[in-house]
Image (cartoon, rainbow, N blue to C red):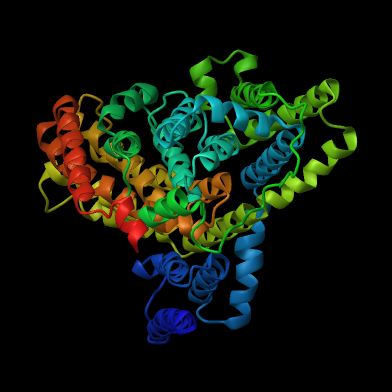
Length: 541
């Protein structure tokens, strides 16, 4: 039966790809245009649907890239091959921002390997076993840690993952649930934190206004981010899950199976006998130094030490370079500290570097393909097409509905391209121009917040999102498992947020709309809880 289902999935996948290849070929040969039209969003859609059908992300992403390359080269086979590598993939791997992120990933992987070898991770696990007594407590601890690390989403994903994996594993919390918590305390926290790389990015997209003031005023209207954070606490305290997450959680709770499927990356180092000299400080101190060093690295790139103000330095910072430099300082400190403590020798310390690289290979590979498919859609004029759709939506609708419409467009764009920053980087200037940059217009603030909220929502739902990929890497769980288990949760919050933006567009008051949206979310979750299988029902199956 399993083989038949697998064959059917691949047949359906082949038909799915063939439809777009044949349709695109017909359009091209009959004089039609693919670039700058709705066809420009086909490559990521092909990749995303393929990944969900086949449960295999690498080949799905590459096929999506190649479909886009065929579109771009008017079905020249050799031209498409050449464009895939020299026109799309290689430029992404030589981009300074991307290289900085990859170096940061490798160093973080090496630090995790170092902490494992030194016994810090095992010591923290022992401490957590004695002090965190329940599954709810473990989830809340992971949520709070994620909320504390609000500087950058990449940093958040990998740090929370490495610290909390031993804790959630001890309490039989599935890796998919951990990945959901990591993902939901990354972008949603960063997008409402005035001091973060995300706030700096948003500020850079708003010219000619008091950007930080605008960002702060938009926070109460960022319904998706605020409701996502609230939802994590509700699920933890009500002790229920739904959708595919429920299966993963029940398998973890009742059977001790943290992964449910056999697609377990399990790349973390396995230590048969944890270092008995390791202490909790051997985990905490390197993490604290990493946080401080990364913050200093980011404001250094923004000119803080050359006289720029702290907020200005964040606005002008290069997060990629800052994280890379900060993580380098942190790993040097960690190695020296462990050598002084004599919990690890120099040979083992150096061996941790390639181990860290190997641990991050899945994330690096998926990131490379995700960046490449974004380059392909950029070449096809996807951003310009989305901009034209937004511009066209200005006429013919009630002005009060604009925030809700913009929210949906931002979701679609972020889902298709896998980038939050690219989404609100495109849409926010359009919204500012639409309202004449008038900060006294409350509807403009709501619409800008809808851009950011929709971008984060689409980013959450997309398998090609870099933050989603990082969350999978942080939890060390199969990427498609993370995407499929998180999707019902993200769509629940998105539905409530959409209603909230309709209400906000007419009331123009966050302090009325926000409580209404909270009530809607709680009501929806209580209703879902009534129809969700209990642990006893699962145990009987």
